[in-house]
Amino acid sequence: MKILVLGAGGVGGYFGGRLAEKGADVTFLVRPRRAEAIARDGLRIASRFGDARLEVRCLAQERVRPDYDVVVFTAKAYDLASALEAIAPAMQGRGHALPLLNGMAHLRVLDQRFGRERVLGGVAYIAATLAPDGEIRHLNDFHRIVYGPRVPGHQPVCDALAGALEGVKFDWEQREDVEQAMWDKWVLLATLAGVTCLMRASVGDIAATGSGEKLTLALLEECAGVARAEGFETPGPALASYRGMLTRKGSDFTASMLRDIEAGGPTEGAHILGEMLALARKHALAAPVLEMAATHLEAYAARREREARK
Image (cartoon, rainbow, N blue to C red; front, side, top):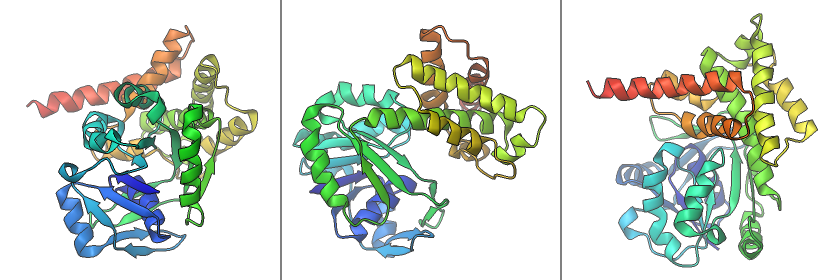
């Protein structure tokens, strides 16, 4: 199986690098500067599960050909339009896109561009970042991909991908109900991003306040209510786990979206919180904490845009 990975940052670089490490046929589609750095220094991973320095194949957008079975799609939601253009040549052949973005709205965009029959379901569980020196730094204790078919015709390529994943140095699972897994993560992430960005604080700092736990759990219930209304009820054990994770005293857990804000960069606020709020409104669900969190990210984006015009 031939795999093309869009980008070699925290997510694509980590999972694609681990695939290359075990000998899978992986190529990275990267910008020229990133390609030069990798050619010079290798693809470098720092992780408690083992460091790696790998020689990998990279190519630029103009050299992409329709030669791949799976195109792993790890762009940020705000880069979705340019990322679609980058992978389009690879999707002209037999390729299937495997998006590892958060939320669900990107599936609609990918389906419209390439057809639902060419777009698998997938979600990644990892905290990783691309350091200024080009090293991919794995920041937590889990590294997992869940993927699976969204239509029956996806099954052969999903099974072939399972073969490529055998022996890789991260956890993975193929699930028939992959969209449920995507929704489950969205519920967790929308709550985590919403509350840590709104409060500009970690889970532990929020839990140490008088009303932090109450507001966090209210946001979790609102997001779970949206999922339920859309036909993807969050399983009870998962909700119980989320409640514990999101209210743990002393925890330094935050969303990467908070790091984006603190760096003054763009965020996935519209994709993660704005889309969740839009669905709450569609179903006429009361979601006051979600509305506040989404509006906060919307205002942050408006301020960035205004200041950029000065």
